[in-house]
Image 1 (cartoon, rainbow, N blue to C red):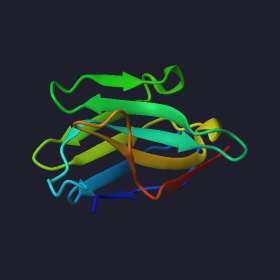
Image 2 (cartoon, rainbow, N blue to C red):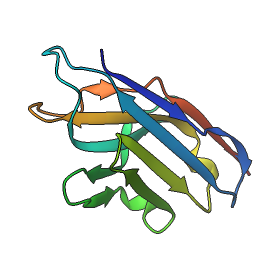
Image 3 (cartoon, one colour):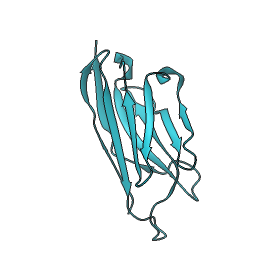
Image 4 (cartoon, rainbow, N blue to C red):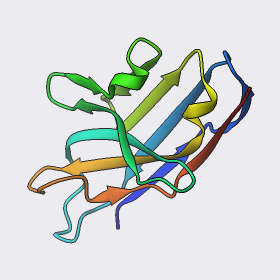
Amino acid sequence: QVRLVESGGGLVQAGDSLRLSCVASGRTLSGRPLSVVAMGWFRQAPGKEREFVASMRWSGGTTYYTDSVKGRFTISRDSRRLLVSLQMNNLKPEDTAVYYCAAHPIGGDNYSYWGQGTQVTVSS
């Protein structure tokens, strides 16, 4: 069973920083250890749909960001294990959301494994 466990959320003030981390583990339904095409972060604010924040392709390390976080957020990985982090600097109240880690497995069509989410609250 695949598990994604996030950590690092919290309550901060505008301009502060937070670092989120996510570790993926387990075996897929085929019984093989999870391997990924990419891992990413998404977020969902109250009353809004879940949106993409950042992702990293595991082979090559190419990164992608939504425009609103470019220059403030940095996604990184520990390729020795399935760990992805999101360094969030200069946080803004509009960054307040539940942040979810997700994994796009090799052989899969999209992000099909998700963490339970971690709350990030930025006060003004």
